[in-house]
Image (cartoon, rainbow, N blue to C red; front, side, top):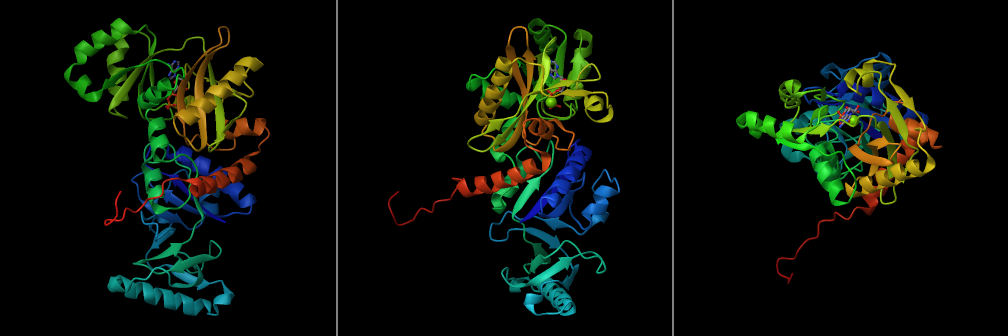
Length: 433
Ligand SMILES: Nc1ncnc2c1ncn2[C@@H]1O[C@H](COP(=O)(O)OP(=O)(O)O)[C@@H](O)[C@H]1O
Ligand SMILES: [Mg+2]
């Protein structure tokens, strides 16, 4: 079983994604999976990472173009796999094909060149055996990549894609759309659920419709802010009790989020939120509430982990508290009585279902233990996934260790693909509909 990890990406959470992918990569290797890594640079360029071990070991925080040749996933179900661009095809490893390393090397390169110049000769099923792809012939990895020719490139077959990407262009349905079109099974939610959960304003609409309590918010669109700033400020101050939280509707890792104590800070906080999105939310600060997170796993029969609590080292769980300051604490399980913990789990599953999630999601709450009130803050469809991240930690505390969790996600991706109802039915032009 070969898994392709997608990592890096164009969002502000590029490094976080690399850190998550490093842990997933290790667990997959441990579990006996064959793994290939596709890095996405901050500019959006896709790179076939030739030596993922050294990339991860060397503590690289960032995907760059020098890690390997360009590669692509095509939106064409007849051409699945990772298409490695170019002319870097080396050495056979599959003896059953009955050709020497050298002859495959020459053969493939000759054919690739030929096809570049004669694209009409393209034929996708013509496999020439199992070979390795590398920028440099002396380096041979990963094992057993199959190459076939179609256009100017070599195809690496993969069984599942795990997009270990956070935020915009990774967690928001865009990459999921490409993967849906490619026909390759992938870990996590599909296009719609990913897009719903990326946008906090839309998440609130969908969850409220299902009777799930959410933190209330005033939504401001950028065009209104640009044209009616003073009237909006009036409106917000009339409706909101300070302190408030101002945040972009679609962002992540607390980028663009600020806590505003009084009217004087509102203007710049809203401007700041609009650096990340076209919609901003203004929410009452949930003073005195516990920040509780719950991991959900599954497709049509999702299950919830024990809830955990975040105790930020700073005034709120901002970017520094999340990734730079080690004194933020995760309390697992959260200090909630059984009734309240069960309610968090039940609401987490309801929210997962309401948004149409699959595979995994972390549902984040504000909970008031004294009154039993709880409000969903947001749903993360590709939550942080390092070994010390909340999502896997909660599963570990619930009896599912990291490596097994990763293997389970691969199974769920395959199951989702098998049971997907999105078949395209052909309508016969001559027949009645
Ligand atoms: N309404 C709120 N009340 C209190 N704290 C909040 C509120 N909204 C956000 N926060 C704080 O800001 C952090 C980041 O906000 P969040 O809405 O989770 O955005 P992100 O998607 O960037 O994680 C939260 O973890 C929490 O600490
Ligand atoms: Mg959050």
